[in-house]
Length: 130
Image (cartoon, rainbow, N blue to C red; front, side):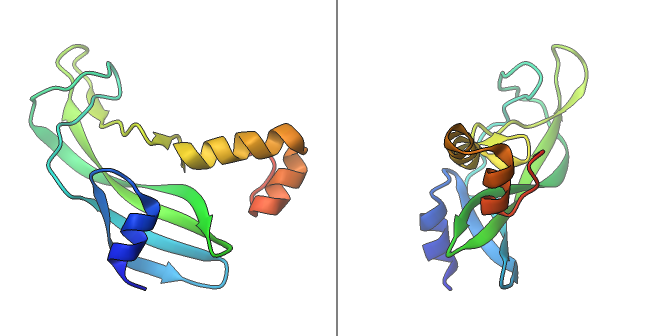
């Protein structure tokens, strides 16, 4: 698989797939990297600050399945000092909701509106509590 094709398939703005960590029968794990140095959006106040980057971390989020396999994205996040409340905050990406992407969350919402949580969890390979 070419990483450019997967990047286009995911369609996440300002990110590209740098490499694949794992590809098995049930899941694919991909590492993303930012393509441009976009300003950090503070997760506390939602504003863009011009403060220096404190540190970097990676979060693992689940995205829509590809070819029947669960897709997990390792997304880099920067940490910065918020001058408004004085706390070190993690940058916010508009397309991530907790531990899943926004489009996967919408897929789950649509699925659970027509089935039970247990059936939706079985279909997606997740526990019904998630």
